[in-house]
Length: 102
Image (cartoon, rainbow, N blue to C red; front, side, top):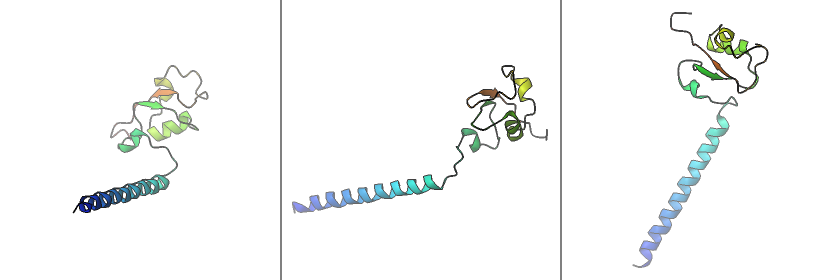
């Protein structure tokens, strides 16, 4: 009788270890299947851009304007002196288009 609780504890430990290993493998598979593009918080909503936008690597004002639908980025951001001098990490204001303005 004394070995019965020990067997139950051993079985429970093995069960927990197998479940934990399965979860780790599942997370690894899901992580490898995600696209290389970084996930930004605004991708979870229907709008393509938030009002405050942080420029990413390789982006230009033209690509941001196309993506966000705001052709007046330079006019709304007086801190941008030269439209060609955009760098990763630059914070800009975007006014997403309203429904019906397409």
